[in-house]
Image (cartoon, rainbow, N blue to C red):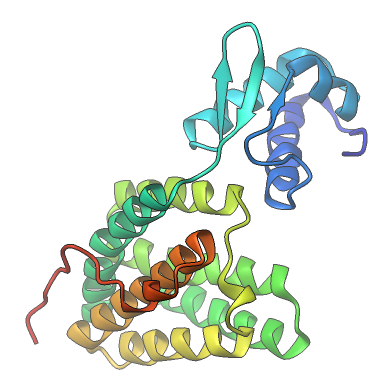
Length: 234
């Protein structure tokens, strides 16, 4: 990581962003132990903002403090992946159902802008920008559903997934991913609650299958079925 040159007011926030981005990029490796002093020296800042930033990352489930040792970048097991995606399924599918029933104009505009951004990033082959707009796309649905706690809960579990750089782009293209999101997009804007919920659910289950296969190299993962699936009225 490069030393930071920033004003004091935003120091902790910028340190948080720098460390988080280093985790996402794999620069800080999963399972590895780092000391606060080591990270402070890399960033060229004092220990206090680094410690405060790490506390935020710990609350997001991205790192764990180990007494008298430092912080460890967390790894996710197959069970962790399943638990996280089951939580997302049970939170995001109902949110899509509600968003399709009624999406306030401000959220509709954010939703449309996010999908346009995904399409442009796909055409440019820009995976980082694609992921950024993907996050905004899902967040717009959650915010349209009107439950701030769901927004916060999903943001936390997505941070855990992103902290390990887990991505299905190794097994499918950006065009494939865009196609899945286009179905969600169409169902939400068409005002089809059951269709929107089902599209989100199938997207998340499909991603879960791929991540399990990538993490275990188990070819039978393609046939994986979640233990419980929510149902929605037509």
